[in-house]
Amino acid sequence: MGLKEFFKPRQDKFLQLLIQQAEITLAGMDALESYMKKRSDKHASSVRQAEKDADEVRRILIDDLNRTFVTPMDREDIFALSRAIDDVMDYAYTTVEEMEILAVEPNDSLRRMVALLQDAAGEIHLATLRLKDNPGVATEHASRAKALENRVERVYREAVGDLFSGPEDIHHVMEMLKLRELYRHLSNCADRGDEAANVIHDIVVKMT
Image (cartoon, rainbow, N blue to C red; front, side, top):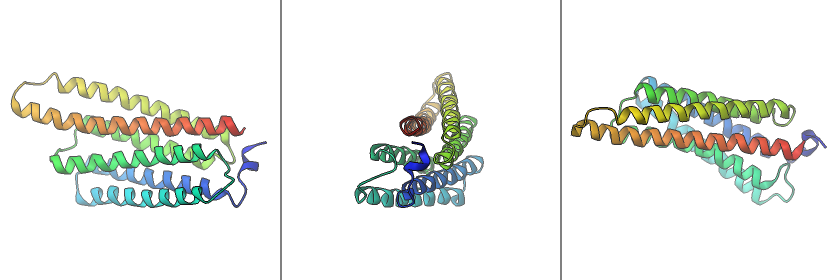
């Protein structure tokens, strides 16, 4: 039985909600990327709004999941994919919040990490769009997302290494602590994107 047989019209709402979540998360990552180019209230507000919108979609999905007996995919997979996508958006939001609180200006490492995360969010969104009709293509997008997440981790390691190679004065130490916290936020964001890609692979394997 193929994926199309699993997605009955009545049950297709779960896939549509996952697509909507991924779409909002991509918009949030687009706003974060703009924020990294120019720190502004406008871009920060766009990230915050995306986080609120994504949370609302997830609440609807969980409510529907709790009231539906038969689901098109394992309910654990629906929940796990929704949670992972939600976590990506949450880390984008907390990155902006931390940068605002700590008054940190974007640097090249932050910009590189966010650009890669933005591309990965695009791949996850495309994977959800292709999941029903073209599961093989969905796995290709998920694999590309995983490759991008790995690149984020390489930039993260390089960035942390650079932090510890600077001067040892108190000003640099304070800046180092702030940036290390932000790098960790984006590294965690990458981990959650990787988890979303893994769940997509699992769904396709189980249902094809």
